[in-house]
Amino acid sequence: MDRDDIKRVVESHVEACRRSLDAGFDICEIHGAHGYVIQQFLSPITNQRNDGYGGDLAGRMRFCLELIEAVREAWPKDRPLFFRASCVDGKGGAWELDDTVALARELKTRGTDVIDCSSGGIEGPLTLAVVPRVPGYHVPFAERIRREAGIATMAVGLITQAAQAERYLAEQRCDLVALAREMMWDPNWPIHAAQQLGGVDPLDLAPKSYAWWLRRRDEVRKLYPTGKEAAE
Ligand SMILES: Cc1cc2nc3c(=O)[nH]c(=O)nc-3n(C[C@H](O)[C@H](O)[C@H](O)COP(=O)(O)O)c2cc1C
Image 1: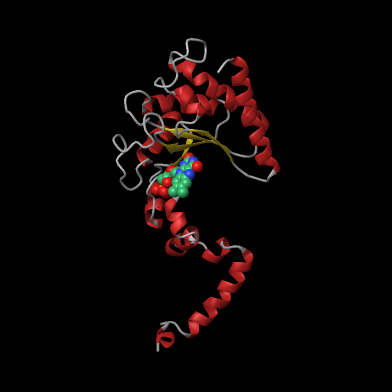
Image 2: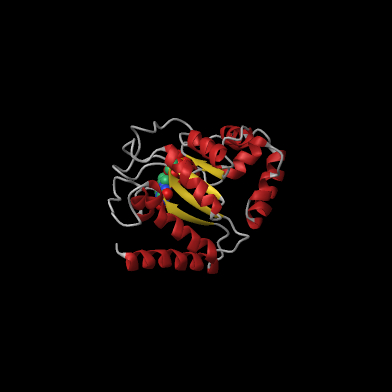
């Protein structure tokens, strides 16, 4: 990529961000992880440039930071800007958590609100060798980044239980949790989690028309609490 290509890719991100705004999105998240172009600039494995966009960490971060500055300019100040980061790469040793902490500090000064903590993408699609898939496997990254860079973080990866998610938040190990596969299995996960954790009427979280019908359902269920009648 020459300088014109770099300008064009930055501008494309800005245009995408404007389209997201027109479409009514509340949050803009820039994907800086999983082997996409931003991470290709960040990682010394893929970035072998010998101009101002390569070399040391500052040089490798330059493309990312210029892009974030341009997007932040286009995205309204009162709407949060997230950055999805591969906290460590797939190989180990090339892009480490310390590098992500340094990047997060720079992103924060440029108006990024949240680091969405993921991993991998360079040197293989997964980080199984460096990040074992245990419950909440990115939480330790989210915890260190929020503590050391002073920026809000979101954790993702095998967060499946309401109490588990709540514990990470209560222990201030992250500021937000994200779920993917569990939401595919149970798209009403947030409503069920609210029901288990209490403190909020779960149906307040449902679309209004669903809530109307589900409240009627509750009334009927009160008449037949065991469900035994249906089985008989
Ligand atoms: C069907 C599917 C599609 C995904 N697509 C993306 C994607 O486009 N971009 C991305 O950053 N992560 C993507 N992911 C990864 C998830 O965002 C998430 O990080 C990962 O599944 C781990 O979280 P989980 O254990 O809650 O599923 C995808 C995951 C699934 C299951």
